[in-house]
Each structure stands twice: as structure tokens, then as C-alpha cells.
Length: 130
Image 1 (cartoon, helix red, strand yellow):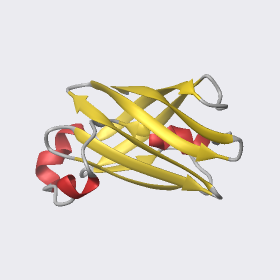
Image 2: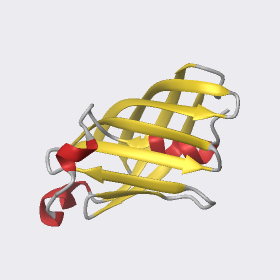
Image 3: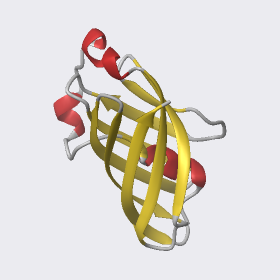
Image 4: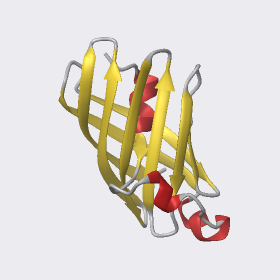
């Protein structure tokens, strides 16, 4: 099963994004991506696989970079473009997850997929400011 930390960000993935390749959003000017800066609440829902049904997590966006608001040994890497497209990857131990989608104003959503100790999982996520 994918751990809470991994789902939080993949979802957190954890925030956001449409199916944009990470290479297309690499060089994002900080001022343009800043409109999404702040705390976001992300709800992750599993649609396939042995992961728990749903979770709610906090993420933070600063200067276009996405990070997990919780603690623990989790590696999170993600970017938000000036148009709100997001791509996020998360790993912890031997588990990983990726998420993509789009933010607009004070909400957003997308999809996620990952691999945990009990198998592959996938689903959707939604995010709101605050």
C-alpha cells in the first residue's frame, strides 16, 4: 500500500496538474508562478488498487516549487507553471507516486498513480487554497 506521505504529494500529488511533461515546465519564472504560492489542502481518492480509499493532506507552493507540508522521510519534487499546470513526484523507501493536473484560482485537480508495497494504485485528486 502506498504510504500516506507518498499519496499526499503525488497527489499532492499532489496538487495539481494536467498531463504535462515535466520537461515542458522546467524553466518557470518565479514571479509568474507566485500566484499559486501558499498553503493548499489536497484530497486524494483511490480509484484502482489496494491503497486506502481517500486522504486529505497539506502541501505548500513557493516560487513555483511544490513541497509536502507534513514531516517524515519523504522526497517530493514538483513544479507549478505560470498557467497552473503541475507535475509532482514523491518517493519514500521503495514506494513512489506521480501526480499531474491543473490549478486555477483557488482550486484544481488531476490524477495520480503510484507503486507501493502491496501493488500499483491510481486515482484522482482535488486541491483548494487554505
